[in-house]
Length: 204
Image (cartoon, one colour):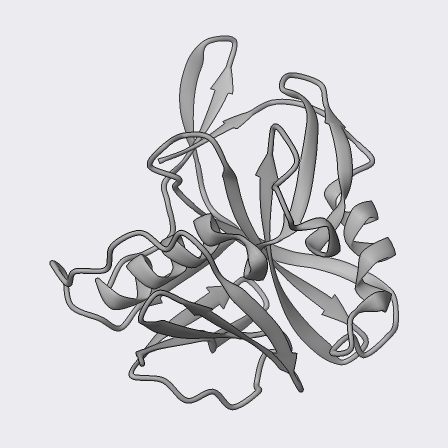
């Protein structure tokens, strides 16, 4: 379950992404437009986990983010920016590909055949379900043991980003349509597109 507050963010997520994306080697250029997003759940309830699907020129980009209440130690180069949340205060926004919480959530979803988290919006203390603007499904098997990934390393490889954590290698598609190799995959759909492979996982 992903709990979402009715709130304003200054700057907005799209403003943060529009400023950060030109620094990425896989960014094709052009104006950025939101197509959809999906969320995963942090079992500890501490970190917000959301992946965005964005239009940039002729390309569809896949950009996972994590939202934290305090800076992530040793992850300064992964910082997308900070934003003021009208309910939660300052949130530090990170490239999810370098965050162990994102890596654990992605690996678990892919390897266990999971889906995106249910989204519930807090409206004056009442939790109301919200339809996600993108959906994902892993190709794995329910009950598969995954474990927690405590540390990760990541680097860009063309139109993908490779992540290593524990005994797993995860490949995150940055530009939808890029080829990925892996034992199990994450497939996504959104209003204007899909299905498309968004990530792959294999044991090493």
